[in-house]
Length: 119
Figure 1 (cartoon, rainbow, N blue to C red):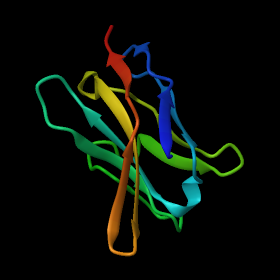
Figure 2 (spheres, rainbow, N blue to C red; figure 1 turned 30 degrees about the vertical axis):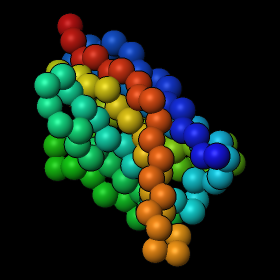
Figure 3 (cartoon, rainbow, N blue to C red; figure 1 turned 90 degrees about the vertical axis):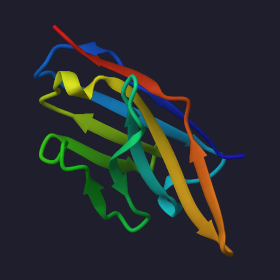
């Protein structure tokens, strides 16, 4: 069974940096579209960044130029490097893995890691 475990969330000052990591067990990250989502208090969950199985990346406009999603195939993890953090970045961050197999949508989620951007 596929499991995703996020880590790296913390309290950070505005302008600071954090690196989130998502470790996959039960499969390999290279065959999934891996994404990072976030959900701020009272708001809907939103896509932050995604990396396809082929390695293509895409970002929400609000984080372009500041966040970088990457894959470490040797460690079977997907990481999110977050620079120049803003208070609006305060949220629970979730890792997802998506794949279509024989017309069935496989969709896995981690439990989330909390990021607080505050002085």
